[in-house]
Length: 76
Image (cartoon, rainbow, N blue to C red; front, side, top):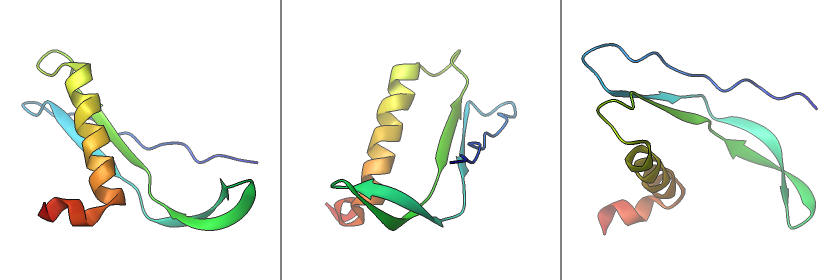
């Protein structure tokens, strides 16, 4: 099985973070022990750790991914 490299983006001053978003692709995913085709989108957050703490960036990324998975939560 081959894996696609995760794309990264370069942070340009004066920015302190950048979000790289890949295209949605159909890939095989194991769910409940069964292989099924699923739509997958790769997202990478690059952060300059001088102005932004990595733990804060990780928490932001978790929240962002949760909102992508459950978009109705944006309205709450």
